[in-house]
Image (cartoon, rainbow, N blue to C red; front, side, top):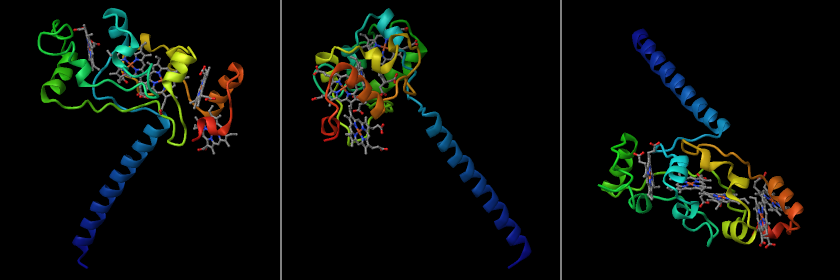
Length: 178
Ligand code: HEC
Ligand code: HEC
Ligand code: HEC
Ligand code: HEC
Ligand code: HEC
């Protein structure tokens, strides 16, 4: 093999490996930090304290289903359509929401709180029957001014079982693992 050609290959390989290293360690750091990036700079505090909305207006199924659900353009467009209350101030942060709505595009939120598939968790059961506050399991969301990127309360098996023990609720394996 020609010497010049070998040098060229070495450079390409070095660049590729360095790039891969940075990429992989970046992903690893993100997993370690447990944080994600959200597509829109959503502000819970503003919607709850200034606009006066309650959680189920957006997390529509939280009282009736096992999932709370994360709201998308159908709900945002109640106020963020052209001329709506959410758009009146001409706030540049709301322009992005309007763009998604106009294109009929789903906002790709990343779900942060998640138990594995083998675990059964029901919001209705805890919020309605158990009368447990959202804040007990999610922290002070109504004080949060930027999107949720990491959990405030960890939902490990130990944490579930500790509260069940205190509340006199079943800790049978099959109650949570179906
Ligand atoms: C009931 C009405 C209402 C609904 C529903 C609503 N918003 Fe808003 N939103 C507002 C109002 C009012 C403001 C304040 C407008 C301003 O500051 O310019 C606002 C502000 C915002 C802002 C700017 C926040 C900031 O820090 O300045 C963003 C981003 C936003 N909304 C996103 C959303 C998204 C995404 C949804 C749907 C998941 C949504 N909103 C649903 C009324 C609403
Ligand atoms: C007893 C603890 C607990 C309480 C109380 C609770 N949550 Fe959750 N929440 C969880 C767990 C655990 C998950 C992950 C569930 C999963 O992966 O299915 C979750 C997930 C979520 C999600 C992600 C989307 C989804 O559909 O699951 C949202 C949004 C949410 N909760 C909102 C709320 C709101 C709003 C309240 C209060 C009305 C509330 N939660 C009360 C424990 C709780
Ligand atoms: C105006 C609509 C709106 C209202 C009202 C609202 N939320 Fe949310 N919520 C969102 C949106 C949009 C997201 C996804 C973006 C983010 O993570 O901030 C979200 C995310 C969350 C998450 C993280 C879900 C996950 O696992 O990724 C929790 C927990 C949550 N909300 C709880 C609450 C609680 C508790 C209340 C009432 C105190 C509330 N929300 C009121 C729109 C709303
Ligand atoms: C802060 C306290 C608390 C935490 C944390 C909690 N639970 Fe519960 N859980 C309760 C209470 C209280 C009930 C009973 C509600 C009722 O009256 O039906 C319950 C009921 C249940 C039930 C129904 C039990 C049965 O016998 O049918 C399941 C399943 C369950 N929880 C799963 C979970 C899982 C999974 C987690 C963790 C991800 C969790 N819980 C975290 C308080 C909690
Ligand atoms: C109150 C709810 C609850 C009960 C009761 C419960 N688990 Fe779990 N379990 C969870 C949750 C939530 C996770 C996932 C989070 C974690 O790994 O901590 C989990 C995870 C697990 C895992 C996977 C661990 C891993 O490292 O991935 C095993 C195995 C398991 N549970 C076995 C059991 C057995 C056996 C019992 C009965 C003695 C039991 N669980 C009772 C909630 C529960």
